[in-house]
Length: 448
Image 1 (cartoon, rainbow, N blue to C red):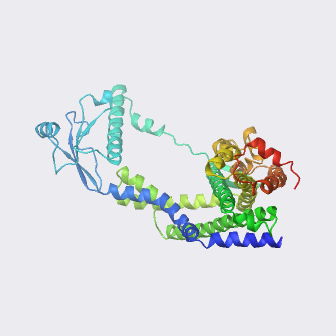
Image 2 (cartoon, one colour):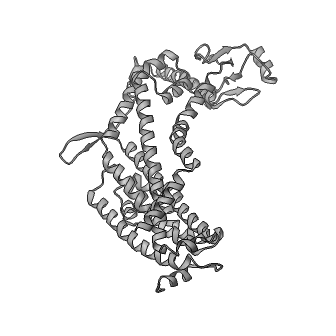
Image 3 (cartoon, rainbow, N blue to C red):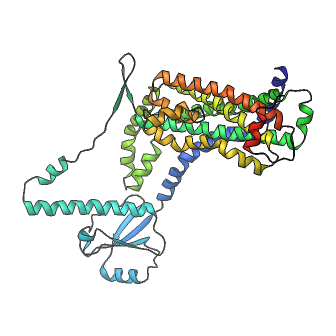
């Protein structure tokens, strides 16, 4: 074991000291945060461009009823000016020309003319404003035709928005507020992280073995180290590199979330809510007025996350990452020892990795129905359980299912390590021969 520890130490220190590892580990949380925040921020910046839209309305349905905002203004024009602009729209004064057809109540279509592509924000903002005006006009026509007093108020009173709040009862009957959406998001993110890390670091084991084999370094190493010790040290060393990266990301992510939450508590508004309000044409004062509600919503979401079994989720994340990595890394190490080229490695690797790929394909279905038969069996099969079980755990599945899944996975790992060790002993010193699965199966029965 001392020799395995030396190999483990070498693999770990060599990789964590690389500049690429340090840079990616520190930058990834920042990049993820930027990926979520920057698009909305940029969208808001783009929407602040001042524009004036010329409006020609022969119907007088929306005349003086289109309200602009700080960035988009509406200017009504006569027919003569409309005729000139519609033939050749070249104007530094107007961003676009909005034409309201005479039959708009029947067709529900308006025209916007410009010499450049109108942005989606402006298009949907104008469409939404016209839609509200026409709905009001149609209601008025119905009210005038029927003649019922206060019909508009009665119709408005029938509009209903339903919010279904989910309450989860604990083992002691304690009711806590929960969210199926939050549980699904956490489960999917955890499963996706395991998939990515197992795939990346499992492939890293295979590449490391292939590199040592192609450089003939392994011939020197196994003169003093048993092949199984070499494989064991390489798998555990690279696995610890992955755990180190995950731990650093969790710490940095928690820190970034805490800073963001403190700024939110000091009165910052919800960025996504602001962007939506700007696009719909609300004034800045209305946005500021909605900020306490946005802050309460954020606090509610944080509270529902806290109601989840976070210690179990974190433990399961590390357990399934470690076990899933060992399971696939041992097989990938065996593949690396059996081949001499990338082409052969890809050919043999694909069938081995298919269960892992299948797990990420079905993980959405598992998260939507965590109690279904597909979810249950996918979380019991050891080659798919690292991803699919993580999608189920946030929903509070029975403990016995988690224990059974972990037990099956551990038992499978023992068998996989034995198989990988047999293949590694034979393949690591074999050169110049293209192997197939039939040949690899024969290696399992060699006595060495």
